[in-house]
Length: 597
Image (cartoon, rainbow, N blue to C red):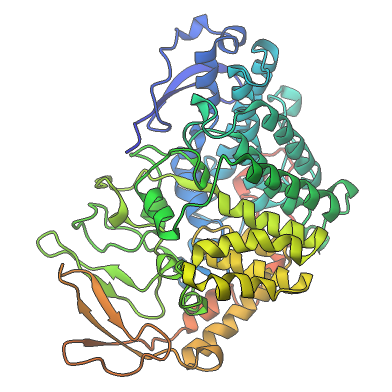
């Protein structure tokens, strides 16, 4: 279990002060001098004080209306593989996930919402970056260099998330002054170019995973993550997205496909050749390690948003549902979202990622403290990557589980390399990266068929690209990265409409889903609470015997079909959330909403 972190963040938005925020990172950082004794020259010339200031950049992430309770639970829905169950209810939560958010959304339209708190983090980063440049002598392979690289990276994270949620946003790269208090939106093209440049600098300053004590955990910034984030932003900047004049690629020649994909490929190849990160040997092992809160650097996780035990709602939102306190958790939560009902049946039956990703049961109400797994119907699936039952500690908090959010893992590096190499050099150059991903997914005795023959048959750029799009699905369902990827591929509306058709076929047991059973049979294992299920696989239609109980597996799917996106809405016209009205009203006329809001 991670150590509780008490962090002294050394400033509020525009002035340097000292205030302690509890329960965020992973250690006790410093004994801070009295406020009156501190100024920038003292803070940023003293390693311990500067480190506290850098860590304070992330403090807004843990606020209730920031990433913790608003951005993480709602951004990234709905896609062709991920469905937020609030979409089935009219109201503010549904608006956020089925492409009909409004500026006055009651869940989001507060002055302490994610938008404001992201900018609070950016302002803190701006102050730190200025202070370290002026007083810290941040050179490569120095402690101050590591700190400046982290500050630049944290600022890039905030901006990357602002732009993927809102599109064009105001750009602030210096601390606020009276002259810059109110700013209009800036073209995201220029922001992407600035972030790519900043991350290029940061990559020269920070160490590789486990190269120094500062990079020994995935809660700290390391060179592999910085380069990976730079590659991700290059792929997004070079991809499709909605501009005020329509969905298109950037017109800026600096953000051309050739330039951006080459940058991404170069960064990914450097990460791969460094040997400082790698895939975990098994997919289930990766997610068990994650739920066990193993934060050791050098494996698959490259960086995680760090939450202490009393903060964070990742499992609270997305874990396999627990209906009551039971043998695994005192927090009866999880299950606000899950895979779309087709996902399980789209996997190859031999793919080891399937049963980890898509779970067809929940934990029922406990009797004498013990709950059983209970089937929930083909219309309700849960993300098996997040499981209280795989944790090493017993969560007792009412509202928070404290489990980190994986922001990037090594699988993305391989898939990005495959995608960029395919575009620039062709499918043969992409094949080795895709094969590495699939080797982890299938048993070794199936490599010849499921890895080598499958990938070698992808003889055109189009075939390889389509396979990479599918591989992202099998690898990343439940991590809420799919929406951004579909947007940059210009596939958002197409894949959502395709999913609606697939859901209809599944409901009617036609087309690719004609042999999906309509009845399941179940009994319990010797432990008394683990389900043994027959009939889940295609073609398993016979009754296995009198010791098995039958369960109807033929629920209607109209609600999901009708609320994957709101009827009458084109998701490509609503790729972003609107800026919330409270920020429009407080902008002195500088901010406006585009995209028909």
